[in-house]
Each structure stands twice: as structure tokens, then as C-alpha cells.
Image (cartoon, rainbow, N blue to C red; front, side, top):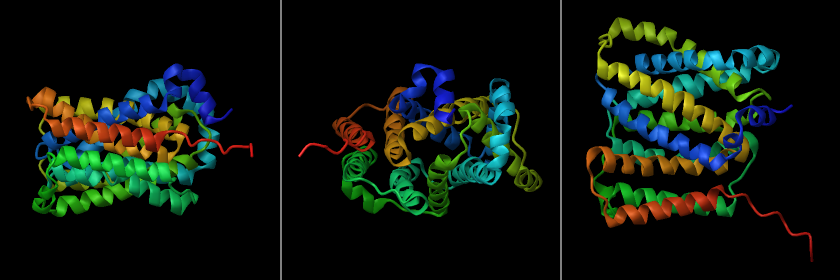
Length: 311
């Protein structure tokens, strides 16, 4: 049985709803950007990344244990691919993201994150020889325009006032790494989604141990207090366990290029969160931007029509 079939059989209706799964992913990752920024200066980036994935591994292990035992032969047969996926997508990307948030503003990160679909498209071409369709390209442009409208408050001239710094360069590297991860997940062995997530979470955390030892020796240790523990709880459960299960399954169902435009839904959800939790009032540019993002995602993510067989 294929990985898709295994996941579908055990997960029910939701495991066959890629757009819902990818929307849940975007919602969780929008919250991760907020929590990551709040944690900057309180929890060192390698400590945050390691504890995030180690705790997520512990949360997932009771549910994944039997699948891991059954799938171990397949994992061992593709161990090189699985380790690469774990190191780049779990260990490297998230550590660099948290490190970047120590040096840059949320606006810069959101703008750079909007290039995610283009990065995925380049890796898809390099690794899989898969090109963007015209519909996917048009959808990416539409949704990117919507993101810019929201982030710049409808004033495109504000682009000239944005200054990029060390954190932005770090996040660009992180984004390139995550694009590579997104495409490499399509080369995973045919194993259950819980097996894949548990192995990559555990291996990703393990690869961070040498860096964690170095950080503990060179930076102040994280204080044990309620805000830090709540931050760790959130990043371990929602943007890790929930989001990665949803994202991996979504990519498995519709491919990396069609899933990538959901990167643009992350700042959309972030704007909504700012309205709800920070008291920001909705403005006309919000609605215009939301409409463009959703239209672009719909256009880019829909399945291409089959070629007609009639003359």
C-alpha cells in the first residue's frame, strides 16, 4: 500500500482535503511567527528549535510507534533521503528562522516569505524537472500582489522605505532550505505520515544537539517561567506537530508547486490575528489584499484540466 493510501485509511475524511490541510498549516505558521518574535531575546534560537522538535517528537511518538516499527525497513532503505529531509527541513530551517527573528522585523520576514512559491518552483525544476503551469504562475503573482497590498497598507511607495539587514539574509537562506525540503518530501519512501513525521522530528532534533551544547556554553540559558513554557507548548504542538502533518500530507496530495501558494495565506492569517489579538482595525486595503490572495491561491492550487480527447 502506498503512503497516501495508508494515511487516508487511518486518518479519515480530513486527510483527503489538501486545501483545508494547507490552510490549517498556514494558520499555525502565522502564530509561529508571532510567538517566535515574542520569544526572541528570551529563548535562544537553537534552544527554541531543539526543544520545539524534541517535545513534538515526544507528543507524536505514542501515536507513531507502531507505524515506525512497521515502516522501519522502508525508512532504512531510504535513510539518506530521510536524514537529509530531517536535517534541512526540521533542524536547519527552523533554527535559522528563529535566529533571523532576533535581528529583523516581522514585516521584512512576511515580505520575504512571500517568495516561497517561487523558491519551491525553482527546486521543483531542478530536482523533479517540474515546471510551473501558466495558471500556477498567474496565481503566484496574484497572491503575491495581495500580500504586498496588505503588508504595505495599499501604499506601494512604502517599498522604498524598507531596509534589509542581517536577519533578512538569514531568513532568505532559511527560505531556500525550506523550498528544498518541500520538494524533497516527494522523494520520501512509501511510509505512513506519522512514521515520516516522527522520524524527521526526532532526527531533526538530534542533529541540533552539537549546536545546542555550543549555545548553552556561549549564551544565557533560557529562564524557566510561564511565558517561555507557554511559547514552547505552542511551537511544539501547533506549528510543529499539527502543521507539519498537515503540510506533508497536503504536498503529498497535490504536489509542491500547487501547495506552495499557501505560503501567501500565512501573512493573511497574521493580519487577521493582529486585528483580533492586537486590536488593529480592518481597512479597505485588507479586504482588497485578502481577495487577491485567496483568488491567487485558488487559481494556482486547482488541478489542471485534462486535455480533451475530442477533435
